[in-house]
Image (tube, rainbow, N blue to C red; front, side, top):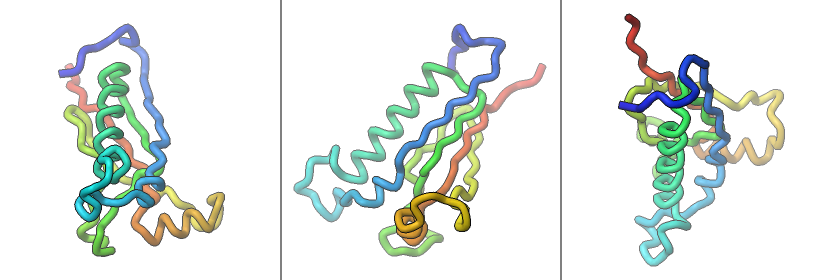
Length: 131
């Protein structure tokens, strides 16, 4: 169970743009076993989840919103796509569409991200017990 820190009694929101579009440009360790793991998708995913877990432990937010979360499938099949994020204990998670095709900036970049399975906002809401 997470410990309550000095912010007790205040609403806490953790918002982070995780730059998931960069993940899509990385190579998979599975296909490039001679690469340094830290420069691969697997390394990116591992480092990201560790950093996020530390931020959640440090700040104990009620809500976490993450921008540029991508889901990816080597086969291009959306039904088999997996997220680069782990689920976190004591939080419910929700995915929301992020890309607004009429208003988003850098359309060339985001068209590529959309085609490759990205462009999602992920929210985590902390589970609470009402007394």
